[in-house]
Every structure is written in C-alpha cells, then in structure tokens.
Length: 64
Image (cartoon, rainbow, N blue to C red; front, side, top):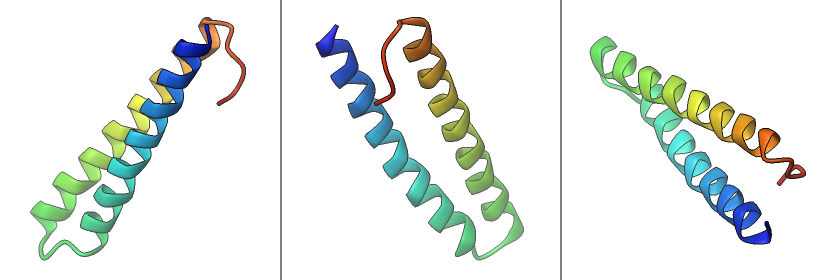
C-alpha cells in the first residue's frame, strides 16, 4: 500500500510541474490560438489531478 501512496505522490508532483508550465505558457502566449491550446492543457491537467485524487480516495489511501 505504501508503494501505491508513493506512486500517487510522484504522479501528483509530475502533474503539478506540467500544470505550472502550461499556466506559464498560457500567460505568455503570443496569440489567442496559443493561449487557447495552453488553456486546454491546463484544463486537462486539472482533470487528471482530479482523477488521480478520485482513484486515491477509492483506494482508501490518506491524502498525499
């Protein structure tokens, strides 16, 4: 069970890095099309983080 907790922690860290970069790209995008693509990445990462949280919760793991 501890290995699973560590994997969720690692996944959350990785998604957090992707989210930070996507948000930076969104803010500094040179045009609307680029800003829109970056916003889609931000939304997708947030969805993935939510899904990981849901899986962790269903696995009866405490918050990481």
